[in-house]
Structure formats: C-alpha cells, structure tokens
Image 1: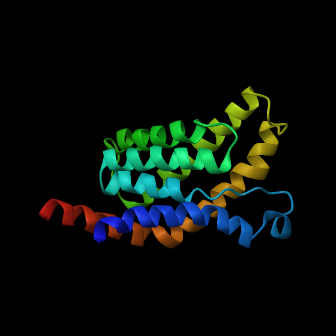
Image 2 (image 1 turned 135 degrees about the horizontal axis):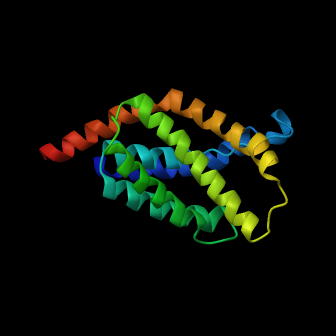
Length: 172
C-alpha cells in the first residue's frame, strides 16, 4: 500500500495546480498578474534529489505528458522540459549539498527555466503577444512568489517523507 502513496500524492499535486487557480482566480485578487503553480515540478525535483534520479525523471516525463494533454495545445513541451529539469537537478546536485535551502533555490531556478523555455517556444511559434518584460513582471515573478510560498510550507515535510521512503526502500 505504501508504494501507492507517492503516485497518489503526485496526482493530487497535479490536480491541485489547476484547482488553486479555480479557488483563487487571478482576475479577482491580482488583476494584471498570472501565477502558475508548479507544485508537481517541485515534487519531481525533490524526488530526484532525495529519492532516486531515475524515478524523478520517470515521474517528470509521465506527468509532463499528462500536463501537455490536459493544459496545453502543443504536445511535448512539458513532456520534454520536466525530465530535462529533473536531469539537470541531478547533475547539479553532484556539485552542491542537498540541504533544503539549496534544493529550494534550485527548484525556483528550474521553475524560472521552465517558464522562460515555454515562453520562448510560444514566442517562436508566434502564439504569444506578450513581451519579455511583460512576461517577467506579470507571469514569472508572481509564479516564483506562489511557488516560494508552497516551498516554505511543504519542503520540510516533503524532504522527510522522501528520505524516509528512500531509507525504507534500501532496508527492504
């Protein structure tokens, strides 16, 4: 039964990303801002750091494809970028310590990377009319703030859970 907790939690976070936008619509609270929850990406990065690289990349690819199918018009953007972000985090962690502050900063950096990557692809195929300055001020910064709040609240329990699961996996 315990082996289903992580996929269920990943699914819950995936659903929570869209639900939080429905509960707190940007036009009601923040008229000019677009904030994008990237809770699933944070989970995949934490899985990559505190559990296993391969599991983190697999989760990132599966949920990236699911994200493409459900939320975007272009299939493959998130299916490619989420696993690449997890892989880059794995490579970065070879040089950095895996304490919570560093992993949280890396999460925010990867969220910025994904946001700029997606913006660049949409700008390339000309399906966005937003300038880079408007993108940074109205979408990137609010997204970083929202995901920072999520990290402050959930990073420690998430780290504890993943390290416990990883240790239980090594014992049994």
